[in-house]
Image 1 (spheres, rainbow, N blue to C red):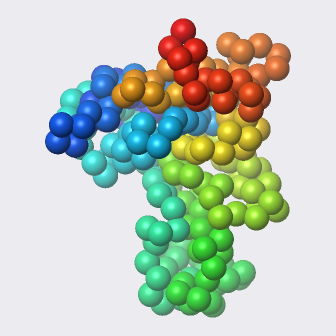
Image 2 (cartoon, one colour):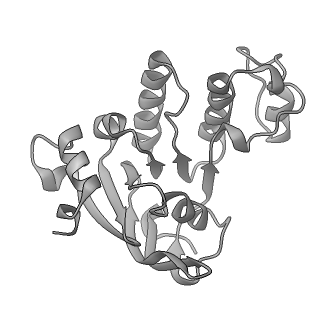
Length: 213
């Protein structure tokens, strides 16, 4: 369903794999013009929640309201056959000059990841979900990614990243949802005052149990 005013809204989302309950009624909301982040330990359900929001997995219960969604799950989800521009043509995108003529199978992890990120930014105009976007990127490429995240959000899109990289999250995130024990606790820059997010605060919340307070 479409989110009100373009928002991505997750209400009461649950998901279990057999007897393992990953999500226990997650409620969270992300707004156009802001960068949201999902943070939590391994196995907390960040990727599962993103894939459910993108319509790639079904929740056991709950509702998701969103606009058109573009989801990118990392370089290992990309096809490695053919050249970069062949991959872009299949997505209806214009050829790229840098790396465009190279074969996907000959690219490094970082280069392949950049190809996937570039395509994700260019696809659609709705919600953009990026799973571990800073992985495998060199410092200059990280700075470029941060600029693109800010620019994309400020253009009016919903942007949500999931990451263990707390330094990068602290730099760009306007809203952070901490996933732990199957539930989400959200914080915004405005709630935290003039200092906003910093790595030490994010680390404290990441570790819990203060995230639940």
